[in-house]
Image: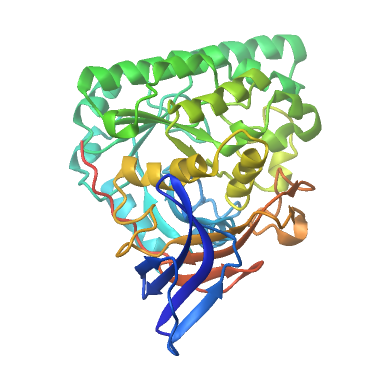
Amino acid sequence: MDKLLITNARLINEGEIRDADVLIDGDRIEKISPSIAADENTGVIDARGNYLIPGMIDDQVHFREPGLESKGDLATESAAAVAGGITSFMDMPNVDPQTTTIEALADKYRIAAGRCAANYGFYLGGTNNNIEEIRKLGVGDACGIKVFMGASTGDMLVDDPDVLEQVFAHAPVMVVTHCEHSPTIWRNEARAREKYGEDVPMSEHPAIRSAGACLASSTVAVELARSHDALLHVLHLTTATEMGLFSPAHRAEKRITAEVCVHHLWFDQTRYEELGTRIKCNPAIKSPADREALIAAVNEGRIDIIATDHAPHTAPEKAQSYFKAPAGLPLVQHALLTLFDLVAAGKLTLELLVDRTSHAPADIFGVAERGYVREGWFADLVLVDPDKPYLVDNSNVLYKCHWSPFAGHEFSSTIDTTIVNGEVVYREGRLTGNIAGQRLGFARAR
């Protein structure tokens, strides 16, 4: 068919919910109206009153390619993403080889072409010795510059104060940071080893990757951004104490913005006894009070974006002891479903959910013509059935690692259909096989 028409939808977009039909022509939205008639050259999807939303733009994933394909790759993880209603993703640079040069960045885009079910963008990674590569970066070449201000997975820690000053002074695009203070973490690890030896229980993780370690690092990042008037986006915040660093103003008025990830809104440290290393991540999942503070900050506007930090590892890797098990968990297939459950629990509104997962990342990163349901814009759309439960088990997990921290949980909603650039890529529980992802355009400069 030349065109695709979605009828009888409940459209959630730009702060309102209304009945709407949406007509797609090629990769663009042609018309939005209360009622649109189809002709013989138009395919029709009857939404049956389900919610229609702009696809989620996930600004933080680790799809593991190149070099770490035993855990995941661009094809497998982007397929899982569209099954979860994520239509665009921004992938991190701690792969092998690391994406820390302009050449490596171009090679990663080459690898991705024609293989991603969702739209894709990539970060350039900062190191202690690649400031000249950062200076050479052009607007649109990358979604941002990723700076690990605390040691996490891999060896991309930027801990030279002079280098950090240069990054914030000269970054041509947004700086995004992982904020944990490594010396604090190393001291906490030493204390845990003194008490437990190598058999440290997972319950110690939020004490080792402590709130103090997070606050010390995020405070430095915010001070550097203010000093150099840099664009800063602080990733995966986890603590109540950090919320005072961020303004509740609308994102259009801010140069420093903040993100929370779905697992920090969903889990708290009471779940370590049950789930163990399956929910080991950096920064750590912390207390119930921290979780509630993060939800409040989303509602207040202090937190601008909700993302995933999708970071798959194989099941045998995660089954190791505390110090040996890598940090990170697979999330893209179920991220939106967790948020719809939080709506059902009265923690968020539908309008806010869409704003923080679609509108805000598009605005903050300058993603061209995506993130909203607008005539003339790219047709990245998702239908969600709020009344059809979805049980997570091994038979429907699409990650290459073949496990999920949500296994056995029944969500209250189901992703019914995902459309990327006008092509149906997921429909009624099945991938269609369409590889519709395009390279994202970014237009926000320093």
